[in-house]
Image 1 (cartoon, helix red, strand yellow):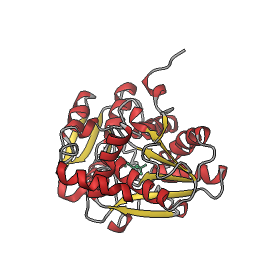
Image 2 (image 1 turned 90 degrees about the horizontal axis):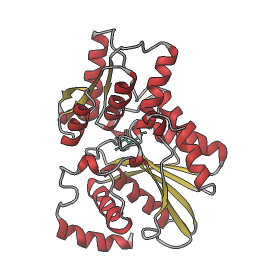
Image 3 (image 1 turned 135 degrees about the vertical axis):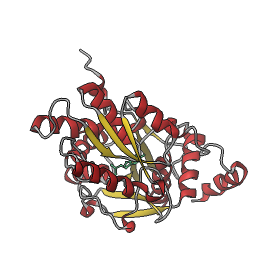
Image 4 (image 1 turned 180 degrees about the vertical axis):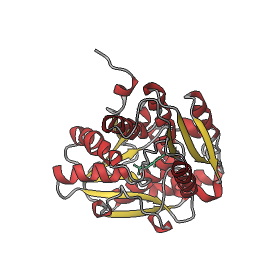
Length: 310
Ligand SMILES: Cc1ncc(COP(=O)(O)O)c(C=O)c1O
């Protein structure tokens, strides 16, 4: 018997990227988290954080939820909150895309904007102030909530290993670090020797959803001991990765996925053989109002051609 939409979270498709792979001996796979109900990997942690908080009594029936989010977690919490009867308030930088505002409105979430120039750290500060000032509201706090990495340890990791049991490298973007920590712990237990690789933006460069550890904030949920490598990605390389995903594999993804594919290709280029799995955190729909798909197209075409030499 089918369940409701919360039961439809996870179980996302895995596809092989044959056209992007540097050789037939190095195989690239992508887990398409855009296939989740609200279009991102964050549905997994919204469900786990809220169901665990309700089960423990930390979140009471009807209680308001507040969370800082650059967008995806906010939208996922808005869905889960609307299905389970919790009003949701999201603190979000004022320079995220219009689609995020539209979706949050559709799910009846309240939006509080923080200054865009302060990035996600500004949103975290403001949400913390609001939660401290009003003890009746509950903040799941994805950056510090163990239910975040646990969702990945219990669902994302096993799903990956079931489809690619011979995995050698796992690449994902670093935002809260929940994906890398949870999947990393699971895979390292199941397949010792697997490499866990983080894609981070260059300090000062904005890739929505990702953060650089070099900017001073290390999320409490991140277990840095699980990371074998960190690669810093420029905005430009993320954009090229995004356009190659679309052009070569037909995958319509968000900008952080461009950063992840860039890192996966760098890692793959250094391997003689093996299996690289990357996690693509969201679909492209929430970025359609941006110029990601049209920006500096001629120059980019030259880049795309020369990028084949990576
Ligand atoms: C678009 C996008 N990609 C990647 C990530 C990183 O995932 P995680 O928070 O599990 O590190 C996030 C969230 O922070 C995100 O919104």
